[in-house]
Image (cartoon, rainbow, N blue to C red):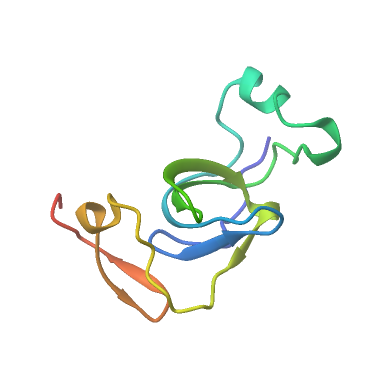
Length: 108
């Protein structure tokens, strides 16, 4: 599989196209790099192609915080300007500026 250029960057706030959650990109795989079991657990009619960037997100929805692994085709830029409340955001990133978190939180 050929790696493609990622549409979203580290620290960018995105939301899922179909499901009600949003998050901050903290890592990017140029193509699918998770287990086949994980991939097969996605219903076939919703299963995204493997030959696209996949994003690791510090994600949140109305009830919880978690880590998500999402294909590029299922993400859109979040233009709300609202901060992501995931508790690990502060440790990984600096301030939210223009819809994107600066790299260099407390751990860097």
